[in-house]
Length: 487
Ligand code: UDP
Image (tube, rainbow, N blue to C red):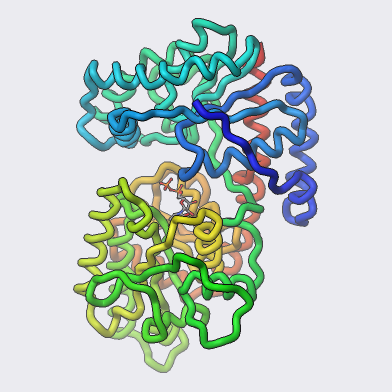
């Protein structure tokens, strides 16, 4: 078990200094008074399985900084595991909660699952005091609750960041496997009501994920800075004098022959001059990249067949670029699924007509430096005209939240997490079925050809995020749950 040191970062005053966040911060401070008082003398222990990568590790530091500023004592522990078998099991548990895999879990799995957690117990017991509150994130450290409770009188909450809208044989099987551990928890937190497994409905609170508006992924980037990052990461070429040096690792692109290479002058995407449709996600079949590419191609073909070449609409569609970006596999050593999906997409791209290849950019974003990766995502999102999240299934879809915060119009599928965020025709557009290429094509074309509506959706989207999906709205719910569980 490792205790993680949280580095200093944005303060409450820094958030309050943003006009658009000012009143959310004031509301937060007002509502936080009572629960903060209740929590005096109690330490909150967050326990998860990684200090870098993944949504939990990304959000915890900013949440902790703000709670600490309010006087809440909060610490972060990460479980350690030497056995690879442990992460194989927890990956299978993770996939099964999402409904995939065979749903088979053996007693041997259980032994390894519990044993690794037991190895982490003594350090946890050294640190945690009677009366503290422990929050266990996701399945990996789940067996710890019973072990801690045997030794100390504490409240323990389980925060599950994943889920599937419906019950299947596989989800039933995994929840059955996890059932013995749920008994020892005092409270559960899920992201959406439909993710709560059958038996748990009683002691559950729903807290949707949220973004930190001042993180590198979401902070404001002025035009000059935005262009600078695109240059630094190698997405734009260097024919003009630039203030900053290039990053050590640059963005690569899938070339017309299917190889991966850095962009050079010949591959110039003219990114800052063209309308851009962007989807940024992990290379996962459920993110609907292939379907999006099909719809994009169809939109261009239909335009060439039926459009009036003299019209602005025709030119706009003709000029539009599709950007599909995700992690560079060179930096993700243990994701064979991701590599296979990228390969499928690359093969599909290779088969695209030559005259359309330059309208589709599959970008591979380096992951070695989290700050640079976040800034590249931020700059790409800000350069886009429309941000798509065409997910066939989606936990929540933080990419949509990030886009809306940046006042970008979003086109999302009807997956539960996305539908919770996007109000159709108000804060973006919902194309219910991400595999319905015909309707996806129509929605995309409509959005591109209605720039004023796009502005309106973008503005409304930001407001929706400010009111519901920032750190502050989330922390209020957290404080309520925590103070409710103080013994
Ligand atoms: N992301 C990133 N770099 C990439 C691809 C994705 O930083 O190359 C980020 C993206 O900005 C978002 C997160 O990964 O913050 C994905 O979260 P989301 O909820 O959209 O989907 P998940 O990956 O959890 O299924």
